[in-house]
Length: 319
Image (cartoon, rainbow, N blue to C red; front, side, top):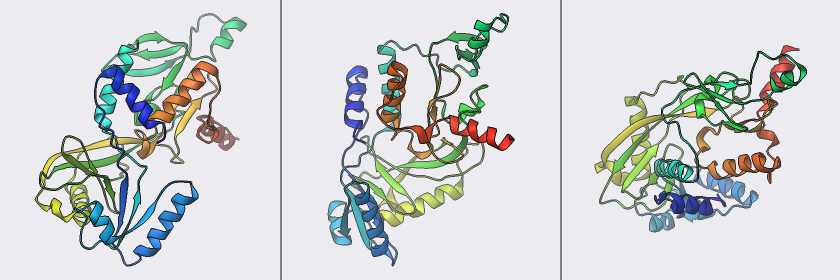
């Protein structure tokens, strides 16, 4: 979160595209009878982590965000939190990367990790067999000194990467609303749903978590559930127009933690498994990967996120 302003500023400066960064804070709303207990738990948790969290009465919360419903019992304001338009950020990051010298093979299929030549069997090449030399893309080898697998939920489909990145897709259905007469400034949360205002006037509502493989259909049941939560949180959305519905696939690791760092295959790094926090963790992930590639050291302890945890677990299980 602390890295985000500089991260966005750099991408916007290079790309010339606004990323919809909104550092306006978030409000979590509580509706049930045990709202005071939930409120105190959330506030204590955030304070324990050194994060700002301010308890709000229902009246104070509605003064900040009048769209909140009358059934609101209490709320908590997290003033330092922010939101960003993931679509615009992704588009801007790709353009910024190209302008910084990256070559993008859009629409190409990454099939496998390239481990080097197999015909030479002297001792030197045996060592080379343990190094990643790039990727096999659309049947052609692309050489690279460093290879980073950051293919989201598809990372495990790349031959040679599956042992280090055993992720599976976690489907999330969402929708976008337009309500010209309803003003929402901050991200609003409840136990059922979150609402994210965008600079273009849309209000995003989501999201489900479903394990259905790579299926991306939008279902009536999921949309009904999201809308029910949205209308409880902000009843004025009852007259909103549904502008869009969609589903995405998040990369979920077996232990639900990110997978970031080097493998025992020299030259190969993994950056996936972020589950629901991929965009949120983009700046720190980029920084850590860049630090490792340039210095082989990182400024944050990332051992818990090592891709090798799965390889070592597999070896222990086999033994």
